[in-house]
Amino acid sequence: MLSPLTFVTFNLTYGRAKGYLADPYRVVQKSTQIFPGIFLPRAYPENRPDRREHSIAYASVNHTVAPLHGALETSYRFYRDTFGTTSHTLGATWLQKIGERFVLSPSLRYYQQGAADFYRISLDGTSIVPGPRPNPAGPFYSADYRLAKLRTWDYAVKAVWKVSDALQLDAAFEHYEMQGRDGFTLASAFPRAKMVTVGARLRW
Image (cartoon, rainbow, N blue to C red; front, top):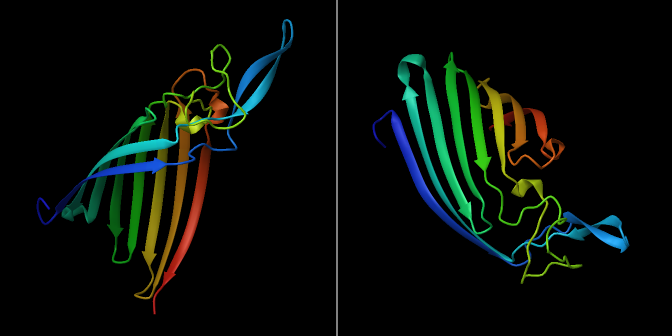
């Protein structure tokens, strides 16, 4: 805590996963020659390493702006793993108190990551000979768009109304958009979404 109005958080995280880490429903294409000069695309299950280690550094600063009856929450997250992925996440939320029982909270979140070392949209043009099942000895390959070089934007606004000491109502609208950054993954592979949520909390 820097002051009664400013609170700082910092933490480090290390994680390790071991075992079957491939997604059995994700496939990679490679064209196979069936006759001289005639090729047909064939799908093979992806093959990821059977071990993944990651490190995360996270920092946040929350500051109350008393004259405006509001508060600003900001955060930064750095992530790196042994798949070769590095990412950065920036977030900011403003909490505006309106009257005694109403809070309006617009927020923005930006995320950017690099591709995993073994991300490929197809195996054509490579010397990789895929197998019928995952092989922990490699070679590794995946066409999962979540491992691509990408960025995401997340805009949201949330309203909370404290009707009484026992009842609280809330509603939120969120727009989420993911964009590729590698220049070759199809734009249609990356999702967009608009979400509306409503909720209620009752205490007794």
